[in-house]
Length: 105
Ligand code: FES
Image (cartoon, rainbow, N blue to C red):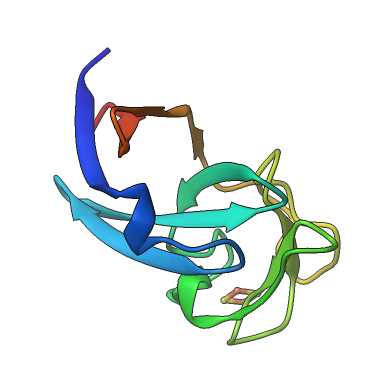
């Protein structure tokens, strides 16, 4: 699986999120509770950017800014309607202070 370098970890402090364009899609990268979570940035319900939504690091979820579904950062699954399909999740790791994602377009 291809590995893509995203950002220095120092530029993604605990409790923050950033989106990255990779190939034909965008990936949202969250830093919460000492871990990194990478999800498709586009909501599974309609065209909204999850990285623009309200992110709750304590609950490990993000609220879609368009219709309010809560997505679990660990699984990409919606916890609430109207979204009912998950968004894709990606494995991340840190090496020498850089964040990498394993990604297939
Ligand atoms: S676009 Fe995300 S819940 Fe509708």
